[in-house]
Each structure stands twice: as C-alpha cells, then as structure tokens.
Length: 151
Image (cartoon, rainbow, N blue to C red):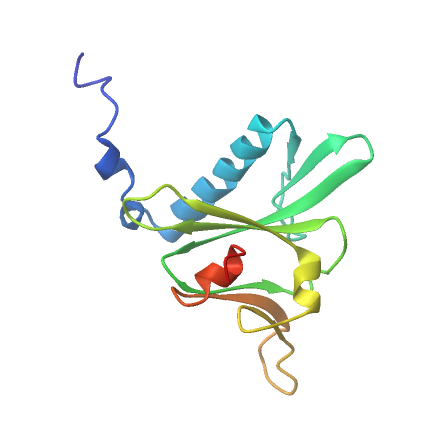
C-alpha cells in the first residue's frame, strides 16, 4: 500500500491534544451526527447556530429533539447560557469527552437533568454579577462516574 493512502496509525490518530478547540468541537458535532444516523435518526443541521441548537434529530414525524453539542478534553467545566438553553422536554445536551489514546466518551443528557442540580450538574444565576446565568457540568475523574450513571 502506498504511503499516500495508508490510514494514520491508530495511536497517533487518537491524539486529541493535537487539535485546537474549534477542531475538537467540530469533530464532536460530526461524531454525534454520525452516531444518531447509525441508530436510524434523521439528522438536520442548523445553518446558523444562533439559538444554541447544533442540530435536530427526528425519529418519527412527531418525535424530534434539539441537540446542543459540547466537547471537553479530560476534565473541567462546560456551560450552557440560559438564554439559549431553556429547559424543555425535547432539548438534549450532547457531551463528548476526549482523552488522548481513547475513542471519545459520549453522553446524552436531557435538559430536564438541570431541574435537580447537584455536584456535577449546576444551575448558576450569578445574581448581581456580570456573568450571564448558566447551566453547567463539572467534570473530573471524581465526578465522571456520576455523569455516566455509575455513581
């Protein structure tokens, strides 16, 4: 096989630290879209992401969900501005966790999960401060089991 068509070595291909923030985010969005497609969903992309919706998935004409994708490397804090992420039954947060040497971990979280904040899922209003109100996820090795249902 020619070097021009040989796929990259697996270990090198999973070095997410080689990608910048925008590349990781775009990869996460496409990865989720392809996974939903594999499971039989119709996937509709937003041409402009000005409402906090990256894409819409549909199972049947009357069963659809708006999806907002977030990505993170290893651990940290991610958030959704409340002006764009308003809790409702058909809104999902799709979180991709990237760790070098591993396939991305994927989490699909109903927006209603923020109705009961805890140490992982937080609801911050920042009353009297400059920061805009947000829903967040605190992700660390300690909180990861609670995120995927093992905790």
